[in-house]
Every structure is written in C-alpha cells, then in structure tokens.
Amino acid sequence: MADKAREIVEIVQAEDVQFIDLQFTDIFGTTKSVTIPASGLEEALERGIWFDGSSIQGFARIQESDMFLRPDPVTFRILPWTGNGSDLRARVICDVHNPDGSPFEGDPRYALRRAIAHAADLGYVFNTGPELEFFLFREGGDGPAAAVPHDVGGYFDFSPGDEAQRVRSDIVNALQALRIHVEMSHHEVAIGQHEIDFRYADALHSADNAVTFKYTVKGIAAKHGLFATFMPKPMFGMNGSGMHVHQSLVDIDSGESKFFDPDGEFALSLTARQFIAGQLRHARALSAVVAPTVNSYKRLTPGYEAPVYVCWAQRNRSALIRVPRYSPGREQSTRAELRFPDPSCNPYLAFAVMLEAGLAGIEEGLEPPPSVSDDVFHWTQSEREAQGVDVLPGTLEEALDELASDDILRAALGEHIYDAYDRAKREEWDDYRIHVTAWEVDRYLRTT
Image (cartoon, rainbow, N blue to C red):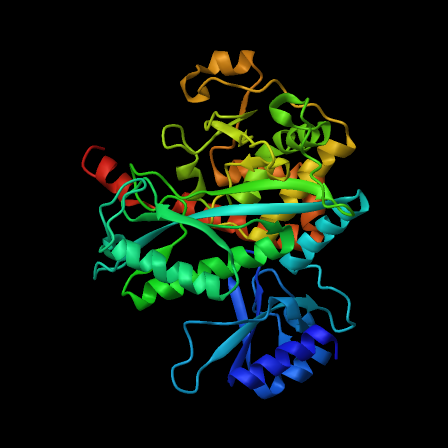
C-alpha cells in the first residue's frame, strides 16, 4: 500500500472512525456516495469498490452498469459534524473506472483531469479560487415557495449576536476542520444571502473543495433548523448567487506566475491576454456549463450585478472577466476573475471547459478586444454593437445551442458527458417551457 493510503488507514484506526463515505458526482455535480465500514477501507484503497452506475445521471446504461470507484487518498477527511455515539465517519473522493480499469469517460472529475493534463503538456498548472454565494432560508410550512430568508441583513452587515453570524461561524469552523483554508466570510447584498471564500488551489482540488463546501453548508444549516440553497436566483427582485472564479496559470516546474508581466496592460502577460481572449470567444457556449439551469438566466439579467456582456476590464464589475489589481510583491496573485458562473454548476465540468477555452486562446494566439472601463449596463444596443461587445445567451436553450456548435468545449466534456448533458438539459428546458407558472395565471387568467 502506498504511504498516503497507509497513513489514512492508521488515522481511521487511531480516531476510531466507523464509516467511510466514498464520494463522486454525477454530471450535474450532485454528490453521490457509497458507504463502507471502516474495516473495508484498506481493501477499497488497494482494489477499489464495485458499484452499479446505471441509475446515476449521465453514467452507464443498464447493460453496462458495473463500474468501480478508486479512492483518491489525498482527499481523505473526517467529517466534523458526525461523531455522535458510534457514527464518526470520514469521506474520500473517488475517481470512477470501467471494469477493465480504464477511466470512465462519464466521470466529471476525469473530464477535468484531461483538461489539466492538456495544460501540463503546455507547461502550465491551472489554479482556481471560486467564491460561492448562497442563501439561508427558514421553512415556511407550505412547501418551498413559502420559505423565507432567515435574516434581514445587507451587504457586510454584522451583529455578533445574530443567527447569521453564528451559522457562518459554524460553517467556517467545519470547513477549517476539513482543511479548506477559509479567507473570509460575510453577509451578501440580498437578505438571507452569504458568501464564504476559500483559498485558491490547483483546479482539481479546488473543485473537490467546492463540492465539499456545498454539502458542508447544507449540513451545518440543517443543524440550525435552516436550509441552504445554491439556486442562482431564488427571489424575484433580489440579487442572485454567483460563483466568481479567480483563475491563473503558473509554470509547472518553477511555480512562477505565467499571468504576470510588469510591462503589460494591468500587469498582464501575453499568455494571460490570450487566455482571456479564448474565454471571451467561447463565452456564449461556456454559459451552458457554468450557468447550467433554467433559473441561471433569471440571474444573468442587467441590473443585479451579474455580468451579461462579453467584455473584460480591470475595475469594471459589469464586465464578464475582471482583472483584480495586484499589489507590488504579490505578483503571484495576478489573475483573471470570471464572473458569470453560478454555484449550481458542476465545478469539475465548469473548470474543465473554462480551462480549455483559455488554452484555445493561447494555442491560437488570440488577442482580446480592448478592455472596457465604462459601465456596459448603461450602453445602448447600438453602442455595444459599435464596440463589438456581445451578450450572453438569454435562456438555457440558447446556451445549449451555442455549446452544440462549439467543438472545443464539446471535446473538453467528451462525447459521453456532452451527449448525456445535452439530453438532460434539453429535457429540463422543455419541461420548463410547457409548465404554466403562477406569473402566467396572474397575468392572463382574468384578462384574456
């Protein structure tokens, strides 16, 4: 057994861990789990665990259901909110494999591994730092529509005795126990809305952290009698929840930033500019993966801070890509912030397509259009067209059509994931399209 695997077996024995959750995600990013007693961990690490993948969204067909999970030992964590009585448990994130031992093409983590390998071939490591926003609600008693925000706070509001602060503190403590380095937490703009930011990492483990973050937030919220949602736009007239992603490339050997150039615009290197250009070129297709739900396009509307116009800038938060100002001595922090992803996305797939779009810009030697310093929200359509500023899709269907015609991003997902994803998302759109909403009834029932 490898050293890391042996180390976690010893931890399990020393801490008297009772159960191990072997975790993976479906194509939507939903966490799935197979639980084994701690006594089976050593065998799972050595040989993997067989499971039936036929009922997992985007996985195998019924006649090809057998596959197995291979735990990634570096992702081992004891879950800090367990441990009552004999229920102390840990989790290990797994890669999904075919019966012959080859990686399963439908595993979202494998899609990201492929993109990371492409970057490595070019000499890069891709680092990401996602900022996930979420809402906390109280149950209203009459179903989800009756739920109400748990507080009336606003942006950066603070009261040391209020429940919002207590819940965020408990979430931060749990994340820290899971070795997710929290940098800050605060109340967001809308009532009941919050943000907790954690330190950047290489894209694979940053995606692992994002998935872990979501179920940790939900678990701690439930302990407070609340429920957390990462729905992009849960309330009409209020700001939605985004997942801004800070991105950078570093040299695979030296670890030095490949985005920094003291003589470049905004201190950006040619590599950084080309990376940005690639993401701008593929932005409309990217939206199908990074803003993946019908509800995502209720958030991506002008007037609520969510960017919809395909442009880039330094301080302009209406831009799709923002370049944060760097401080002298912190050249390694030079980065590009992609602002239109939302937390309903699958982080593995989102980071994979984001990376491949940026690498395409580098490989094709693209140059981004001029940066935009004005607030594009206030431009007219003719002004945007004169400046060559495109707009994101307005619906999920439009985004899926863009993805269908984008060979780079389809290849990033792989044929298996793309086909399953497109089929499922078009079913989601059709279900929404034919559904009669309360708005329609209020608007038309008595007036037509």
